[in-house]
Length: 498
Image 1 (tube, rainbow, N blue to C red):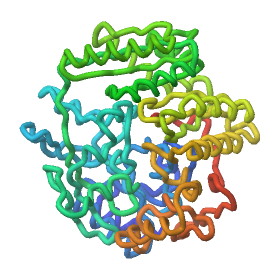
Image 2: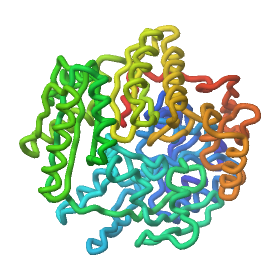
Image 3: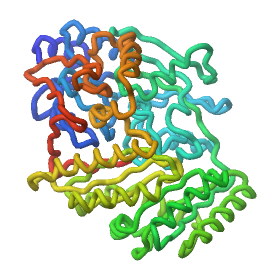
Image 4: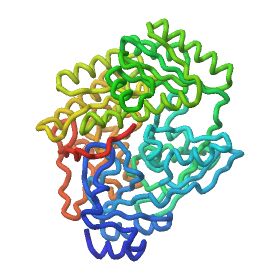
């Protein structure tokens, strides 16, 4: 990294807000995925004006810029693939305003997701998008990846709750799009930027919708002795037009690992469980809960439990949301996947995942948002064992490709990032890439903002510009579908959550 650039950054922000020593940068070379690449410098702005000034300054030295929230992302979106300056929003973490009457809040991007709900719950309000990492992930990161969560089925993903954004464009210009009411006139620019994975602009302010807490909430745990019966139950419930607030499924092997860690009351001898949540007016919640229980029993559920109180409900959800951490106790690493399938394909897809696990010699757990077909298989492996990282990547690619084959998609909420960029041609044509590139280049024509993300880098796939700074080699161009030059994570790398 150019030492003159470092000095100018220190002059702008103060020396404590600029990191450039190798040992200081170690914590910023990875996110929740399994890839790694270090930045050349890390900066911590406190205001939108500082973000704009940083961008203009870095542009002068022709260096890439990568935005980062809490680093909990699972697709490599916050990894500086080509080095450069990483801009971390940890100091921009305030709730700026709350309009209780109109159910709106304006926040900075570094605000942790769960902190927004904590700030407004006294008024009976909450922020609906709830990634399982919501106690650590930031709303800015949620906007970048269009994150979801267990309650996506009824409430949608992040884009359904964002009404306005303040942006810093790649040339440093500050721009505001959308409005508090959330009814865009003309082009829906907020919809364009949410989920753009930091490749079009840096988000510095976010206006979101707030929801009122329901009058009644019921949480049900349905226990099955057959994973096919559990899968068919989900298909039947959605076919009958019942939309629970959440519909989460876990297989029997994974349940044993979770229960040994969390002690949530999950049965240790079942093949699968489904965690349902219904909410609304008391009468509606009661009616939906009864209908779901009836369908579960018709599909041979061993039992359907209804949480007796808030404490029991919270314990069941603690089991679900700490599932990935539980798996971290028995394996040095796990690779968290994110694929989408039609709900009707659940039974056959789970069988196919089991086949891939057996063929690769890897244990694969299944935890997923069954209601909307968003799968999160977890491939467990030891990166210290020869060939195991490569085997995990190969198994992961087989699973994602199968999702596409049965009519699904590459990702439901984790984003494309580095992880799935080379798989994009499974879904998109050269014409599709050309159109997406035109949109990208309209905002980020020099590819200086989060380069080498989303677009495939293989020949003929719209190769994205990769800059070379600080001695970083150009990322290898893969010759087949899959990850480019995967690097094994450290054995003690934090376990990612979804």
